[in-house]
Amino acid sequence: MPKRILIVLLVSSLVGGLAWYFSGKKAAPSVLEDPNFYHTAQGAHYRINELRAVLSDAVARDELHVIHDNMYYLEGLLDAFWKKLGTEEQARLGGLKARMKKVSGELDGFAGRGYKKATVTSLEKMFELMDELDKTYGAVAGTPTLVK
Image 1 (cartoon, rainbow, N blue to C red):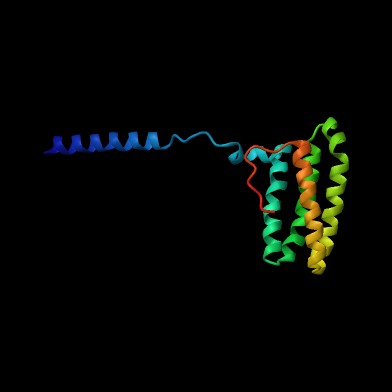
Image 2: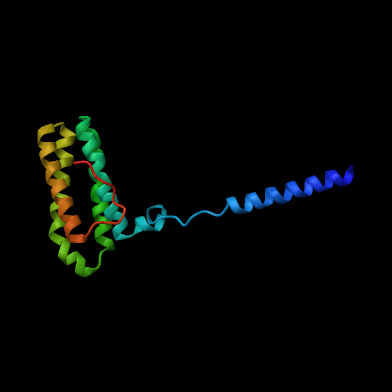
C-alpha cells in the first residue's frame, strides 16, 4: 500500500512538473507588445495614428472635451516623434510638424470652447496632415485600420 501511494505521488508530481514546464513557454511577443517599441519614432507614429480613432469616436459621440483633452497628448507625441527622427528626416518633415502643431492648437481651442463645426473642420485638416505624415514618413507595420 505505501509503495502504491509513493508511485502515485511520484507520477502525479512528474506529470504536474511537465505540465508546468511546457505551459510556461510562450510565443515571442509581437513588436506592438514590446514596451521599447513605443520609445522609437515608429512607436510615436503608431500612437499618433491610434489617436485618429479616438478623435473620430469623440466627434461621433459629440464629446468635444475628449478632443480638447487629447490635443496636449498629441503635441507631446509629435515632440517625441520629432526627437526620435534623424536630422535628415527632421528636415524633410519640419514643415509638416509645424502645421500639425498649429492645427492641434486650433483644435484645442475650438473643442475647448464647444465649437463643433470649427472642431470638425480642423479635425478634417488634422486627418489630412496625418495622411500626409503616413505618406511622407511611411506607414507603421501593424497600424490599426482607422476610422475617418
